[in-house]
Image (tube, rainbow, N blue to C red; front, side, top):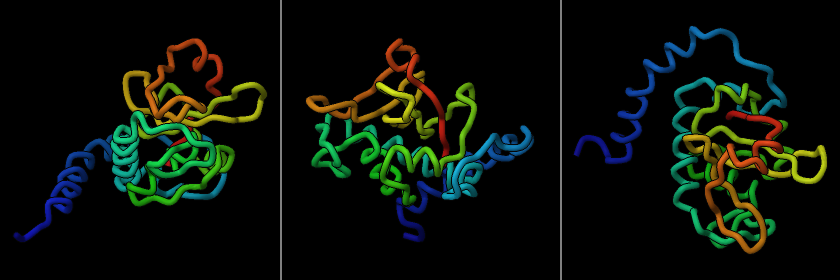
Length: 169
């Protein structure tokens, strides 16, 4: 065959998103940024593709057990799930929740897109939890010991009251 199946899949995906990116470029300057890593990808076709792939990978990890410090399918903590999911999409991200926050491009929560990172406080003002926004006000995360990777709703009062930022790579 002339093109591999994976190459065709990626090429079709890029062709489908190019008109969206063209229209998005007309929407004005990006929001505030923090940190230095991966800024050019945030508005690029590669960034959009990586975010979609990261969501798909995270969905494939649903049910995997929580493991403190875990960053592979044997078990995940919240930032380990994010790092692993993006790594499978070809993007190296920082390992900790704080480092992910500092490196991401902050975006208005009203403009959530699949693959954006949602950052939360838990018991202090410090950002202590991260998940990957999936769709329909849901995000995928590795919540805590004794629980597996799962969906949670941003409409749930627990998470709604603790959401502090949305970041994009």
